[in-house]
Length: 249
Image 1 (cartoon, rainbow, N blue to C red):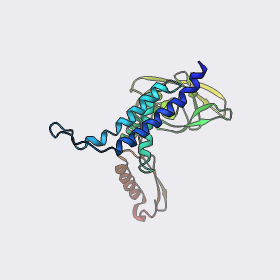
Image 2 (cartoon, rainbow, N blue to C red):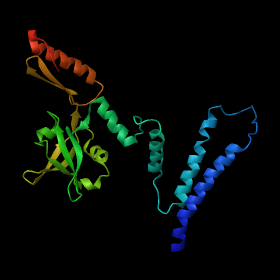
Image 3 (spheres, rainbow, N blue to C red):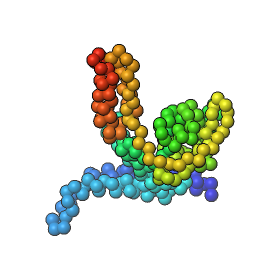
Image 4 (cartoon, helix red, strand yellow):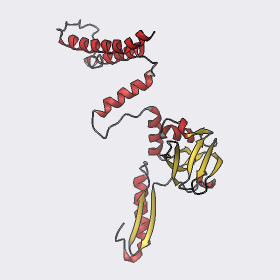
C-alpha cells in the first residue's frame, strides 16, 4: 500500500515528537509525595529517564519503514552519549572491545601480521600488510610487507563491514587454521596460504644501536608490558654504548 508507506515516516516523527513533549509535560507537573514504606532508593529517579529511551526505541521498532537491529541502535545511542563527554572517551561495542583488550594484554591467537584496510581505484577493498611479526605463522608462510590479503577463508574483503570484522575472522583459537589468499602487487600472482593460528606475543619495543652513543628505541605498540620493555631496551642501549655512554635515543 504506497499511501501507508509514505505515511509511516511522518507517523514516526509525530510519535517521537509527542514523546518528547510528554517528557517536558511530565517534568513540569508537580510531584506527588510517595509513601515512605517500600520507596525506591533516591538513585532510582535518575534511571527513570531511561524510560524515554526505551519508549523511543519501541516506536522506532514498530513504525520505521524497515526492520531494525535493536542491538545496533542501542550501541549507536551509547556511542552518541559517550561522545558528548570529551574527544578522548568512547564506547566500544563488544567486538571492538575484545580486540582492544587482546592488544593491551599483548598476546592473542592469530597469525602474526599487521594490516590496514586498502581500496583500489575501482572501489574494491583489500588488507594491506604493513608489518609481519618475526617468528609468526605469517612469516613462516612467506607473507611479506606490501602484499595484499584479498580473501579470508574464501570470502572477499568486501564481505566484511570493516577492518575489525576482518581481524576477528583472522584471529582465533591457537592450533586452528585459516586460509588467506594473498596477492603480490609486483608480480600480480595470487597465492592461498593455509595458516595455523598460534599465540602471538609480539615485542612492544625494538632496539637498535647505531654507534657513536646513539641508539634507536622503537615503540611498536602499547601493551601492558611496554614500560618494562622500554626500560630493558634502554639498559641494552647503555650497555652497547660502553664507556662512550648513551648520548641520544
